[in-house]
Length: 303
Image (cartoon, rainbow, N blue to C red; front, top):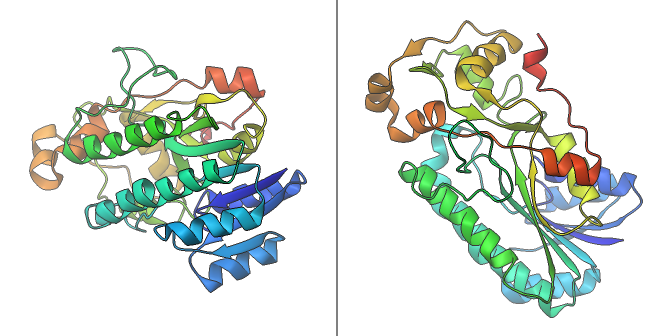
């Protein structure tokens, strides 16, 4: 199958390219740099150096690729979570404007299927349950979370706006594994080493993670599966009070401190409290049933 991957140099992009090539697909990866292009070519893919906000260039590259499927993994995220406010506007522009250019080019070029990176961690479910594919994004959360949820809601609305193309929403959990924040030596690990990530209040907010390699395998399986929305998360949705101390132990950090919601709200704002106390986990039942997918157990819970 001929596959065009936008955001091919990101945390999910690299393992995705590897998995696509491993399964015999012809792959063109879109990147913005010569270094990214050389890396793609070294893996065995073709490279297209294109700025996603340049609509004519996007369409020209997509037509040249003769792709049957587009995978949109466009993001502009910082290396440090604390820098998210600085990156938020650029990330939204890339996903909405750049991704919009890609989506329209895909329809104009006769692409059959469009896979869209979406969110499996800003979902709103009934209290005490896990979010499924019918669950809405929590657009009424704390300010920055609500803004991100709104962006994802717009991406999903765009994805299913045209009968001319098959849409697949990739509702990934928080990525962990190489080149992600949740990897030894990377941002989240460094924060717990410095004891900058406390358990907040009761720490009842539930996070769903997914290893980038497992996410890549599920994404490739969705080239041919039934279109629609899929929660691509692991089997271990866990409250912060459980996963954070386990993660600290996994990376060799001290036991995280405990702070009240009031203390954290004063230090880091309402979003930090939301992540720790109100975030909801997601169910992967559909993805496992339809794809036969078997994500690994969350690594730090193995200890």
